[in-house]
Length: 567
Ligand code: HEM
Image 1 (cartoon, protein in one colour):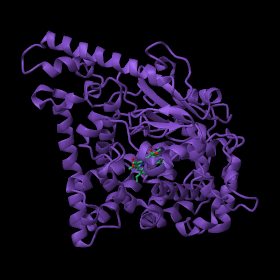
Image 2: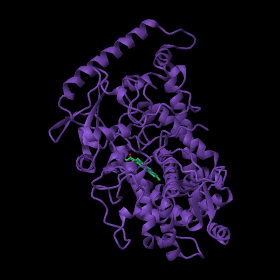
Image 3: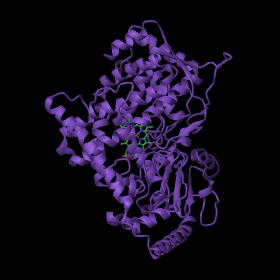
Image 4: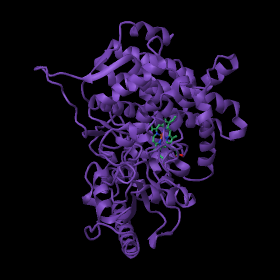
């Protein structure tokens, strides 16, 4: 299986085809034939557009396309130069190419350095493409929340958003009528109240996760991935929990996500530079033919899942789940069968890897901060006791666990730059001009480390969310009750955050009730301390590099209690 997954914020297409913020070109390739192959190179695509059957490419046509490309780039550059002078301050860059070569692999670090120099809002020029980077919660609130009609769109990804997903992938959808319908349905399926229905499933799933951890402690990361996928699948389709070996369908859906990431990589498809190419007939454009074929197959898969849910509903055997809500309220949401099927399928894709990565941040924090683990275990033992596993009914009494969930999102956000937005019209902010079509990056990493809000921000310290008596503090303004900004902002804030918060709460409470997570020892018996900072950018998520730790049961009766909770 490809190990390249969809990064929530790795989608900044750029007409130049150069690397831009949020893109990682270091990820390994997958079975998706488009990106690394010859036919996906600009020249490869040029020749495939005009190659019909066995005939060779017509070179004069290539010439015309190259000239058009040059004209387009020149116009973009001239316009960009005029507007850039009015835009927020910008680090100096190269003539024409701007800041393109100043962006290292983990751009959030560079952006945070630039924040110190240029302030809460700065701009970049990526070879003519205007970009602004938002670095404070106040500016994010002003733009994403208060001016949501301008700042709620996503950048256009023709291949990923229009062809591969037929325009129905909610996370990429244009800010318009279809997105509103999808969002409303998703909100009703995953709001705080709706998520309560999924709690019994999540409790059982957490016991299953702990059981796997106890049986095969060295494979803890695989267990986290399986468990997160299982939680989201149960909530989406009411499926039975996945077994230890997982399910090939999870891989199929993850592969779709990989295709989307790869389709967003700069230079992957010429159609992103020449949008009118999307109207080419399929017999002239192999890339389009292939993309539509993927879309057809994925649609069959997702519609099959929905039909299965419908059958179960008719027989009265469907567990409470998002697919059930979509079927029940079909008329209310006014979604076509295909739209409903894609909504359910892609919600799974957006939720599984993100939740798993957040759980691995938890494992890292416990390995680095044993005193936090001991404090959490003391609270769990006092509230839950040692004769049963924690449940959601204990949540109010376990504020330290809720604080750990908030702190792990703040400390190591799995999407340090969120998902990019795009301005829908010209705007002025604090005297600066922000033209329509500007890419907007939310530097969540810097916001979660604002020293005014989070002194000692480098430390993992759940106490920052608690008062002196250990109760949860009022949430920080502008964080949508979260205390951090890792779920994003405004109208496009993560629609699955309640489900993710529930999964993280119950999984963490259960793991800490059942196990101790300790440092591994090297051959000389010295503790191996994992890196605090090394991370992997996997496309969809940024996660800690793999590390070793030791997982031990907290008492002889733990395995049997866990197994009885699983039933
Ligand atoms: C650790 C867990 C998660 C994190 C950190 C996370 C983070 C995010 C972020 C940053 C965004 C973009 C928000 C913005 O543009 O302001 C987003 C969007 C989204 N998330 Fe999540 N997410 C998580 C889990 C989930 C889960 C469990 C689901 C599904 C059940 C989900 C479904 C979605 C969807 C559908 C969108 C697109 C929303 C839209 O564009 O309207 N996410 N998420």
